[in-house]
Image 1 (cartoon, rainbow, N blue to C red):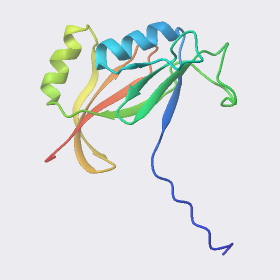
Image 2: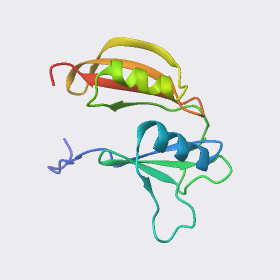
Image 3: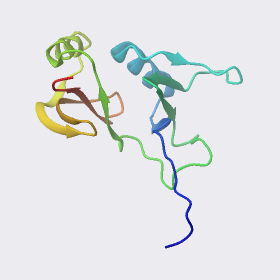
Length: 136
């Protein structure tokens, strides 16, 4: 056993998605999910949205944020977001934006227990699981 130091990881702060068009990605997440657009003072164009207490940041293959993953690739992300709404209401909302549901509702297990999930693709074909915890 090495040393007595124990890391105290608290949460995920941000996730970087590689997309084909940053403005289109921001528009999708802002319009479909009502995620606020974040524009830092030192930037000309926004490149992220707020998702709860986390940020979704966007980059392109040609201009990855540095340091970058070894092979930034469009349409390779899959992640889950939690809603406080009924999934039936979420489905109706997605339908009004012409966003097809690719799977679900399905019973899943998340970090806090049982949940129901539906799955969609964003404008770059990243897989988004939209979930609602049961009994919460």
